[in-house]
Image 1 (cartoon, rainbow, N blue to C red):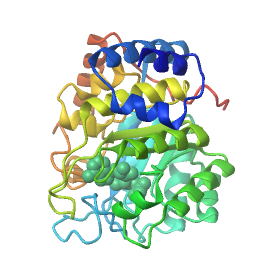
Image 2 (cartoon, rainbow, N blue to C red):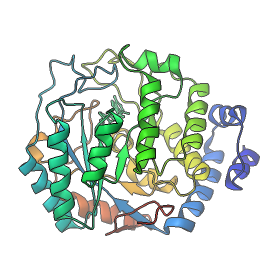
Image 3 (cartoon, rainbow, N blue to C red):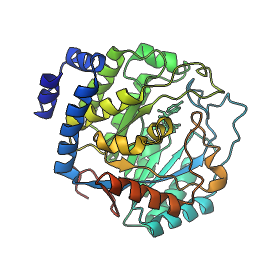
Image 4 (cartoon, rainbow, N blue to C red):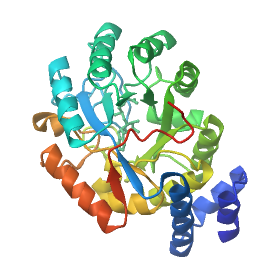
Length: 348
Ligand code: SAM
């Protein structure tokens, strides 16, 4: 294990078989060894800084029916909401005052937010906050739409590929969605000039070690600025309600691997990690992550953006939860900073 981890640390390329070996043989000793190197590498580029992203979950309407997701269109128990432009601007204002310099708009694929509306919202944010990065996480769109949002001022886009294996993709999604289009979107986004983030769920139903190795190889090939991974967590109103949750330990291990494989990557310690372990956020940072995405959505809608059961939402106001976050990061030797937190590869 150590030999293969050293290879990664020395910036050598691993084969598919080596990734599979790592995934199948992880143990506590390997974890410790990996995490130490992952922290060392992350600190070379990003010191002890933790970047924060203000997450605004602006709609939980979705036209898609992904089998794993709590806001899938077939879930009639979901309590649907949409934020108005004014609501979104208020959330951003609060975030800015608190020191957020990246605003993330995330939502289901909601046809009500036409390109015109999105461009209007993005332009307003761009005018109000010229020093902020604007990140979108709004799913699959045409090249033209992505270009319009970019021209309006969006800089980054998060679109997890979910799984790099066609067959596995088909087990997680209905037939109208394809891995081919997902990948096309990612390459379109890159071509337009976005900083791009991709990723996958760890332990999604039917996932094998081979699938995970292919996910890592795809990430290596795409070479994104950001990668988001988190454990799959079952949602009671989905076809996967009885499926096992993903492994916390394997998620941490993969965070460490991704840090070594794409050294400059912006890597969040995700809410799903924090949902399955109360020290999840801290442990994610200690495994090589360097980003946290606190929720800026209004209190009355937070519980409605339920992608999976038990999704943590502290009930704290944004200011209070940010103070907790700062304190918890300080305790493990890291510092939440006021910064756009761009990838060091990107010059603005
Ligand atoms: N609609 C946009 C998209 O498709 O990229 C953004 C929102 S989508 C809900 C954000 C991410 O949530 C997905 O990429 C997926 O990986 C994750 N997610 C959905 N259901 C989940 C579950 N049950 N457990 C863990 N993560 C989940």
